[in-house]
Length: 495
Image (tube, rainbow, N blue to C red; front, side):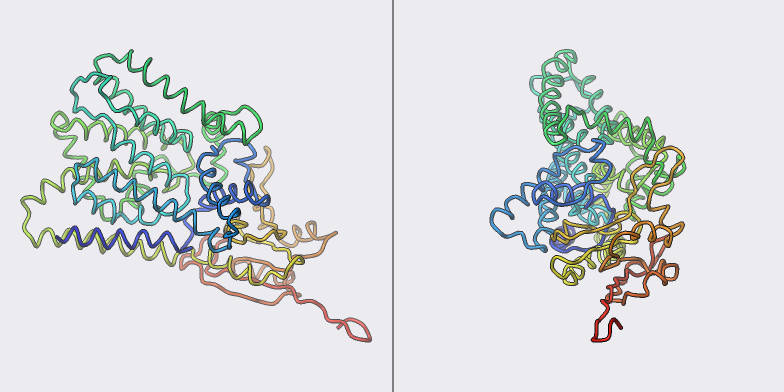
């Protein structure tokens, strides 16, 4: 019963996490989804360079746009509702992914416990990251994928709904393509008529699903465009991602996956080793391990790496873990079961609480304060921060002039605006405000304050919010909000 009780408690806590603004995992959870939808529905907002270049698919932002349109039509578009309702939607989608994972494993309670206690999934499950939606699609598709343990099957009898989900996931994030490449090859090799499967299933579904998504993007971009190809061009052929940081080839193996898996890592390794030792006895596990290896191998060749890029591997890796935990649990003693459950729960709870409630929390908490500080029709905001350090109109929901530093990939030999600013803030300020009024409100990290004291002479500190205990580079411990002090006039002039 320990697994059932813990699973219910964690599930309720995770769904509750979708209702709060919480912390920031990555700027993309706002700037690649919410800001796009906000601009489309409410007519004002900001689009990053990815949307100007056409490397992003509009499907997921369209779901958010539908929510925003309903809120706008019913006059329920209060800022708090606009900010949190997409998180609730994603929490529901992730809940269905959890259920699909549970069904895929044969209704195994330990499998459900593993997916619910995973700290990184807890951290991202209700976030509007494209990787979160991609992972949910992968989990649901795997739950209906025709795993046949190496046996041949008639293609007419197979459930091919997974192909639809695979095509959609590749359009949402082309990074899932390696997984489906391996699984697709396996499916063809275990079907008695592979050519018929390609002609009668793969091609028609891919053309219909892919064609529909191309039509969607063509409508929004106003020109014929295939976003996965544009994504491949910019991120692989041109390696644009390297502008935003690079890592060594082994980073996913040495740091990325260990951090994402946390205390579950030993169980995943146990499952992987069991598959390697007896691949013929665990063909499904061997296929999943091969898909994960290809995914990690190809992504390791790309210099720019992030933890969330391996999020779609989580259902596969946890499947490997449960495949050894479940047989062990049937023979284990009661104290051993309680020990394992407690270690998983506590070991995942600590990073979940810290990253979900504390780390980088000021990014979202500052937005309601800015809304309160905005006098109607006469305010301008300046974010003197690394690019996209906070959300914007999706959380302000006020059509106010906002200036933020640009991080679009610069032309050869040039630097992007954010780097130019931090190299010399005074020079940037002089050029920016030589012919126009300075901003009413300025938002910055405390690490910058000492370098811009002269620019803040006519400003007073309005708010100071704790942000992180581990400042790095231009990201400080606290976020500061300054308000311009208006000069008062008297009968003899200004004072």
